Image (cartoon, rainbow, N blue to C red; front, side, top):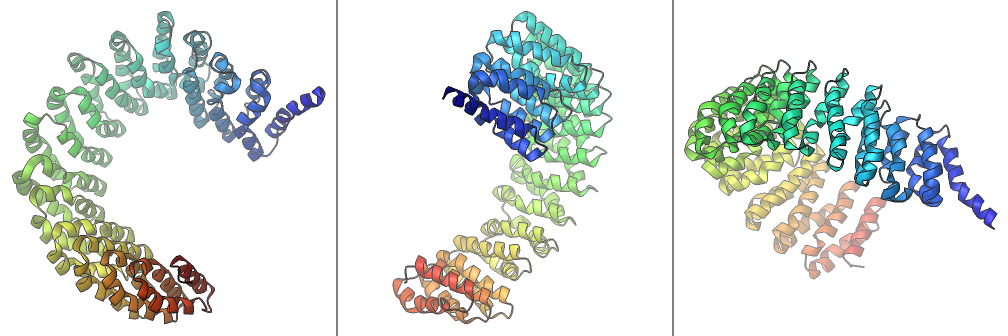
Amino acid sequence: MAGADGDDSLYPIAVLIDELRNEDVQLRLNSIKKLSTIALALGVERTRTELLPFLTDTIYDEDEVLLALAEQLGNFTMLVGGPEYVHCLLPPLESLATVEETVVRDKAVESLRKISQEHSPVDLEVHFEPLVKRLASGDWFTSRTSACGLFSVCYPRVSSTVKAEIRQHFRTLCSDDTPMVRRAAASKLGEFAKVLELDYVKSDIISLFTALASDEQDSVRLLAVEACVSIATLLPQEDLETLVMPTLRQAAEDKSWRVRYMVADKFSELQKAVGPEITKNDLVPAFQNLLKDCEAEVRAAAANKVKEFCENLPEDSREQIIMTHILPCVKELVSDTNQHVKSALASVIMGLSTILGKDNTIEHLLPLFLAQLKDECPEVRLNIISNLDCVNEVIGIRQLSQSLLPAIVELAEDAKWRVRLAIIEYMPLLAGQLGVEFFDEKLNTLCMAWLIDHVYAIREAATCNLMKLVEKFGAEWAQNTIVPKVLGMANDPNYLHRMTTLFCINALSEACGQDITTKQMLPVVLKMSNDQVANVRFNVAKSLQKIGPVLDSNALQTEVKPVLEKLATDTDMDVKYFAQEAISVLALA
């Protein structure tokens, strides 16, 4: 029996080895994904002595398989016997951290970072830290890039001599010959700075930061900008001016647009990190320059940050800085040659009205909003309309209504259906702000026109829009304004438009209430049960199921039941199916 048990326990590893050597990648991948099951079957002892060495030896596979392996090993701690044996997982992960494919390396580093937390401080020094050193001094750049991601996780928990070695290794990698390694070091600079003691941040990190920020490769310099945010938050205010600002000024005027773009993209974070004084003296002129940059991508990134930047300015001088420094640049961007820049600005410019208040908005911002509402690019007009609520709070929407209307009408009839769809979604919001009279007079016909659009997504959104409008303006308004027009479509020669009538009735019945549904909508639905087109007939069955709960039991029994019974014997299978479903849901059988 014991012999048989022995054979049984060998069986899973035999299957794994067979599948791992199989020519079919999918089989190998499946067996890697079942590793935890196999490890459980083998037990912790054999997992350590047989499975892990086997896996370490077979790392020469397809990237997809290696990626799955790197991910699995990060969750293997308990399967090798818990934290005291976690170091057994290091050899296979070390090999994976040196492969050529970046995605696999990144996943291996992620798993190593995860299991580093499960090492005791002693194990960390005995097993983990030597691994980091080996990677950091590897011959191939792949291992050196992986090492960059591991310094910060082991640094806080090792002795001061080992800490000194780690700092030295990081310094070496920051000046590595290979740009990929310097890039990896620059991307982890901020993270590493956070775990260092403040004195070392000043003595070591700042010099590395300065060197990386003036690297010959722009891909390294732009990553140093990210690190700048972390470093600036760590340093006391008085050191920022001398240690960080010269490098940041240089980055904001870098010859590569990618670096300037990164500065613009991180501007709000930088602003919070350096504090109000430096913002006033340094960042305001830098921001002006970015808004006037010769590259459209940089201007668009800076335009996106206008509202956030203005919100975070010191309160005592906020209005003065915006009016004298920022607004002139914004005015130029409104008529920028690049539509992405204008679109980025349009998505945030409305937010300035709450910061500047009523008088400034009417005098300075209103002309800009009106200009953007007439822009030839639909995204710009759309972004203005979608942010109207900010302006409504400050000056009321009436000021804009004369220019708003032509812009809405144009967008509503735009050739691109996605633009039409976007404007429909803002209709209920606009209706609430403009009031019922204005809406009926100017926008009602638009909302009805969308119901017969040739794109289904528009017809569907228009139906949903009507329901939201009825919720806003009430059932009486619906009865006088919407319902007659919707019901009129029931006689349309196009069957798609007749179906839209049914969709509208489904959406409106609840909002309109029992009375309107029974007296006005139900007769139309019942009449449509005789439609020539099967699609319309089965939608009648679906509509009756939907509006049934709104109707009283008398109407259900005397009017709805006979029609559904007739449809249940229809020649079309779908009509039969939906009629029977409606009968059972409404309990009319």
